[in-house]
Length: 81
Image (tube, rainbow, N blue to C red; front, side, top):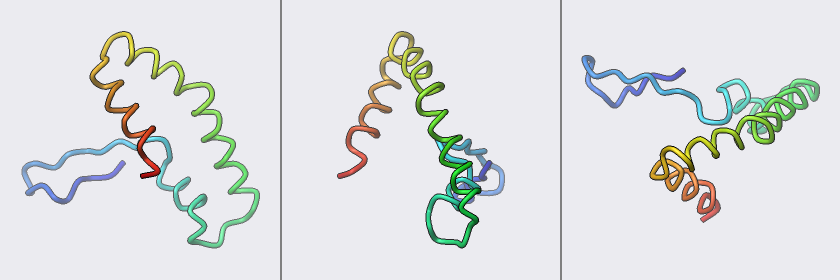
């Protein structure tokens, strides 16, 4: 987890990861030398989250919290812009 250091000392906020852990971001970014096996493992874990866990999260948000679903949809659909 990351701490938002833009807050003053009494207002620290713990930030959870989105889809990738910090280690996975490092391994998949191509910015560091990582064994091919470690990259493969990271890709496999992320793919499982996308195909197995994300659909359930999407269903929960779309049914119970449509405003959050809209935020997610906007980020995903407009992320390449």
